[in-house]
Image 1 (cartoon, rainbow, N blue to C red):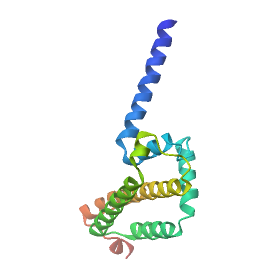
Image 2: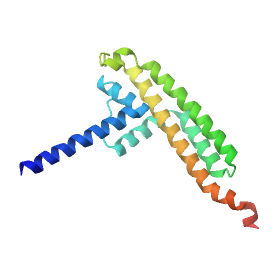
Image 3: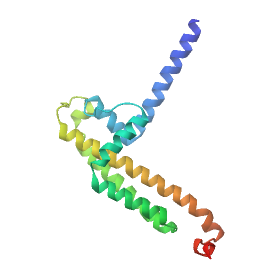
Image 4: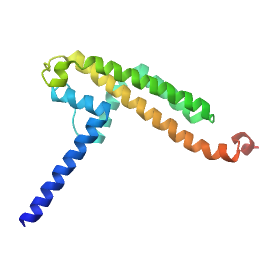
Length: 165
């Protein structure tokens, strides 16, 4: 019986270590963790809860909502791999820019766990940056999915317009 409990505890600790590693190797997750240590982000929970929370926050950013809508339309309508590659490069530049903005909000006090948790504006700014970065990642993934849909057509020389004739 004690052997089973030891195995269960070892499995639990191993899972915890793996989750910690995944958090620390992802720029956005690592930033969220550091901010959360300072009680600067109030949202914790399952992935579904986090995604619902992101959607609520994004709804408060009409420029981002419009950009996402336009990007999704462009991605869905594009059959041009070069155009999709340009979109991916722009998304990567924007993501890097958002990471730079986020880094600018992470003072040594945040990283060391010493920042006062009373900075509502600063925490809102961080949450907004994190959400924009997450959406840029999602858009990048959508471009890659669209590229995969187009590649078989490009390789065989199939043209959609010819198919409709």
